[in-house]
Length: 233
View 1: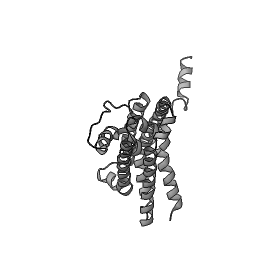
View 2: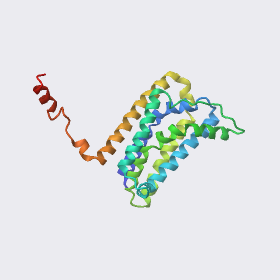
View 3: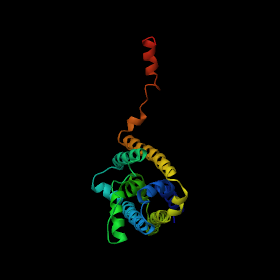
């Protein structure tokens, strides 16, 4: 059993999922519903994310090969999507829902309607986005036997169960924290998401254009200094 592999994967998944960072977004998007409906929404969000992540964990590399998508290109495209999500969070648009009045005969019907509205950005790309998908693909390539196959899948499952429990029992925390604090945290988290998006794009561009990151800037090679000297500045 590769305990180092399992522990590293567990730490990476929790770091990317960032349960504490995503809690304010969950509160903004579902705080107007009762506990029963919110629990169903939480199940739909986490189960959808679980399905996507397990799919890419076990078949991510063949999927990218089938569609002729290089991992570096996937990082660039995914980074663009995360960038838009991050900017929306900073502006406060990502947690705004035009219509919060869902109608249905059962709580499940109401939960499904809200789920469709918040699938983006809560499930995609927050939980199952380029960061987590790239991570599970990379670790999926390290599977060497049935033990690794099962262990990595259980790790993804444990992360989603943790998120489900946090979402389901978030009400006590929300009752003690002012909405203004959640708004501030959401916008700060948006800045971090934007930075992560740019990091993914830079890494992808660096893989596609290796010389791009290796080139010296005009400040480093003294070009600007020489130009200024030539002009007498």
